[in-house]
Length: 114
Image (spheres, rainbow, N blue to C red):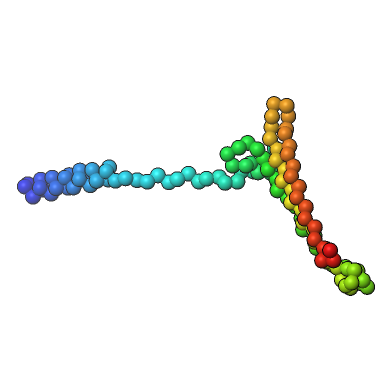
């Protein structure tokens, strides 16, 4: 009986010690994922919320490249290349008087003849 009680006592002591160690362990919580881009569907497609605000922003634009070839097209040359690029920023936000819209359009033109 002594061996049996010794084994049971040591098993109980081991369970208490291992349980205390598990309770003392520090578990780091997983950080919540950050949502960098939230889609804003209140004003149509292509808008997203500016982080930290309730303002929606849409960025769009285009690039155009054109080459003309012929006699004296570019003044003293037989070819001419033109480039145009445009970027448009549209911001929209709701106010008590209705939606407030701000637009910035930047257009750049280049021509090798000028």
